[in-house]
Image 1: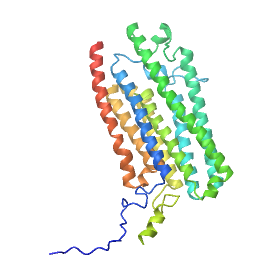
Image 2 (image 1 turned 180 degrees about the vertical axis):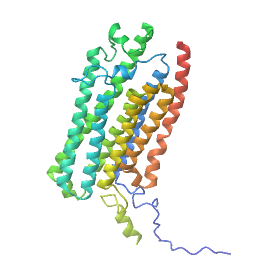
Image 3 (image 1 turned 90 degrees about the horizontal axis):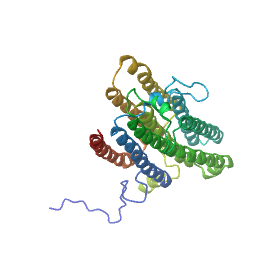
Image 4 (image 1 turned 90 degrees about the vertical axis):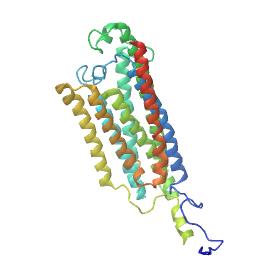
Length: 241
Length: 117
């Protein structure tokens, strides 16, 4: 009993995975950006998880509310989280200007794309400036890769009665992890700013107008949001927890 | 007909007429992110020190709020919510492997602290 309906041999299948079209309905470069970001997410999580493991395994740890309690140039002591709050705000804000640039790109509005891209670049530079101040402040206290503050300064970051050997050990771990992880993130922000500047120049030159699509803005936008995303985690695990 | 749809789907713009981010929605997401950050500050600066809540209770709250922020950034700013389900899964499923590393290394770090104490 052959109930199978005779199919024409040359019938073209039209399911998303039958070939001839992008099953994800995204352009090649955008998909590759997503896959790159996935690999970058693994790198950052390895760094952050190593930080977590070392911190869990340490009997004491420098208290974030005592290490990060200054607003460089304004307040020396007693303002925990204020400066990093500003940095977080700047980065989220620049993420917003980036989506607004992407949104303007969908409408092919060159003028608006330029405006929002410039705002994003400025936001990125402001964040890098804040990070430089933060690093400079910690460096002036004596923290650096492989360096820790002198005994008197270091004691301020721990509860009373913590043995000096433990303070020395965890301060070293803290310093190395802090500069490595925020440095790696800062380097991503730096590259993001450079890429954003290149894209802004291309928009100004009318490259994407001629191409008929501002998809490139969307792709660098993905990278920029990812940088913001990583900061959300760095902020939580270094400053809050 | 199928040839027609395939040309529509492979054009350079890559996004069809489906739902996307509008200006209003962008600002809404921004205010949600700002609000979550403010809540984190409120817990860290006011609630936890005043009530003397230990970090073992506060830290999971921070982590949940952080994951919530991550969701809003990835889903809306990075537009993943409006992409094909296949793409979203291709990105999110590998991320789950990270949980494995977290479990392994937290377990290991408990062993390390046992050696040190």
